Length: 286
Image (cartoon, rainbow, N blue to C red; front, side):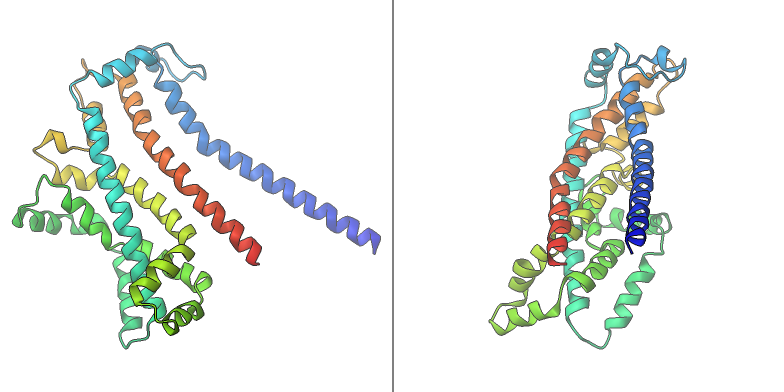
C-alpha cells in the first residue's frame, strides 16, 4: 500500500511538472511576440531592415515624436477606437446575457427553434453580409457615424452561446424562482441576481468583445470613409503601412502598434480580477 501511494504521488508530480513545462512554453510563445513588438518600436527604420535583434535600440523618443507629430491624429483615433470598443463591449455583454437568460429561464413554444436559429447565424461570415449592410447604412444616412459600428454588437451569437452554456452550470433556476416568490420583477431579478452570478463569464466576453472591436479594421474602413477625424487606430495603422516608400517608416508603424496595445492590456487587467474571483468562488463552492 505504501509503495502504491508513493508511485501515485510520483505520478502526480510528473504530470504536474509536464503541465508546468507546457504552460511555460505556451506563455513564452504568446509573450515573445509582444517582446519583439516593443523592441522593434525602439529601433529605426534602417535598423529594422537589417533583421531582428533581442536588444532595444535608441530610437524610442524619435519614433514617438514622429508618431505624435505626424499627419495622422493618433490620439483622436485612440479616442474613437475606445468609444466604439467600450460601447460595443457594454451592449454586447449585457444584451447577450439577457438573451441567454431568456432562453435559459423561460419556457415557450419557439424556444428550441430560436436557439437553433441563433447558432445558425454564427456560421455566416461578416464579409458575406457586408455589401447589404453598407447599402442599409447608406440608405438611412449613417455613413461616417459610430452608430453602425456600435448598435449591431447587440446581436452577438457567439457571446450568447457562451453565456447560455455558462448559465447551464452556474445559474440554478431555484434562485430565479425564489426571487419571483419574493415579489422581485424580472428586470430586477436579472440585474440584481443574474448579472452578479455571471460576472466571470461577462468579464471573459467583455475582454473578447473589446479586443475584437478595438482591432476591427474591416467594418470601420467601409463606414468611416470620408471623415479623417472619425477614423480608428487600425485604419491609421493601415494608412501608415501603405505610405509612399520614401515616407515609409517601419519604426513609426511599430510604435503606433505598441501604442494601440496598451488600452487592451489595461482593460484586461481591470477585468481579469472578476475572472479570478469567479474561479475562487467556484472552488469554495465545490
